[in-house]
Image (cartoon, rainbow, N blue to C red; front, top):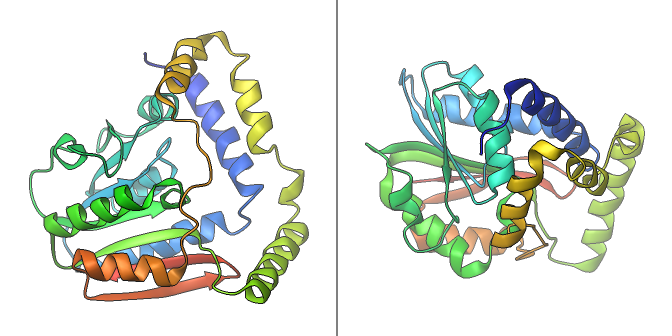
Length: 251
């Protein structure tokens, strides 16, 4: 069910705006992730990158701009967001409709060589523990030595007072930047349901149950444990603002 390019581009613009309602430093996070991928690629002209839980491809598209010869594969289970991305992303970005971490998801990617980087942004907190552990193990199995898994996300804090402080930092940042005036998540989705061209895709989204929820609530410690168990040698944040992290695991 393809979406017309101009319509998709407008809704992706609105998507970026509403995402910043919750993440004032979204573009900086994208830039940091791209910095890590570029460095880890070690001068390779055509690195292979997998975007885990890619949504409409906001991160995948930015990586394709930053690394013009990169081969980027994004995977997600939301047919509506995938259709928006497919309408506007360059051919070098291939989007795959599969449930991250479920049986057979890795085969669905159709990878043709070792992976240089796996990335994700504001996505892995949706994934149940068993699926996330499998996704980490599966990615480790196809990544070359020195490859990186880079996760940008809000991570739960270990202690309640630390959580309150991190939330205060996050809230003040949102207030200072003015993004709280942006369209929010609920308004964006409600408006999308009023567009006739989206009816079938949104119905399929509902049928699959790909409608979100707040999943695993993992801390930095728990992600680190799962990544080490999957075979990653080093795990460390390289950027943080309050509870907003860019976490890097080195294969």
